[in-house]
Image 1 (tube, rainbow, N blue to C red):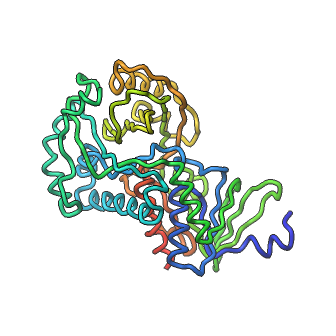
Image 2: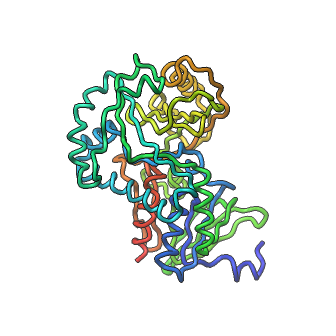
Image 3: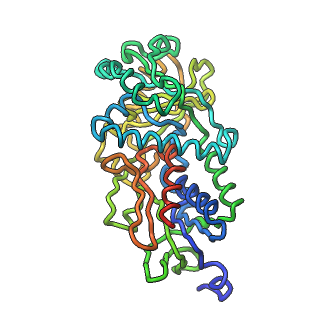
Length: 375
């Protein structure tokens, strides 16, 4: 049961955002920048953001060669360019507000390892570079087959490697801490451990009902609401089409002789790895068990982890001795066309979700579009 004081002081806001992941926090910051007079509350069901924001690999990227070729084939250049530009814009949004040091941004470059079956993609490098020339001042993709041996990768498995100097990686935890600090500095209220059960809309705004201990069930009131709950959005708005995708991740103990640094992809981005200091973080394999990994349950998949460990031992660190220190999983949200869903679903409610595994890169751009929908 709430007190008179709590009802008077804590339940009414101009804007309430559900979800304190990277998209939710970026949106809260963007709203306070554009509408400094608006009161903003962020509600989060967990102590930490629930989903992928604190569980991702920390890639600051906009797309590997084979991924862009796949998108180009499915969506055409105009739509593919739109997504690339938004990823770049989103990264610039973060860097300009937080600074590189706050999120430990390292411009180490991105690499794509190419199997024999993917070699035809290499013939398209000049074509893709030409399409990207009005976005970047220099060619984006170049071949660096020579580095496969010096990096110690399996030369029988990987036939060549494509380099992109415009990508890098961040420290995911530091990024989220910096976003939380900035949001609070801008006057955003954040309540964790508060699960939203349902939303009701009326003529003047919305009621957001929550379940929270020890007060029980009660409602916050807002003039406008925004759902940034990604793969979990369908639990509040079942009619919205979003597909969850679980990502399995492992990290090794420090490896003293690790000969490379950077961000790496293969198999159209289904596998990805990077250095974290002298550790190797490796994730992916969702394509090995699509049906099992289309879930919002945070569980490990022994089959996928066995495959990741085999690839790590056989192809990425052949001949190296290493130990797995930790494993975890995160839940991403995917749309059918790989576009983020940024939509005003009613007069007082918008949604922003389905970054398709690119939340770090897209969040700032999604936040700006969601803020524009409020006008």
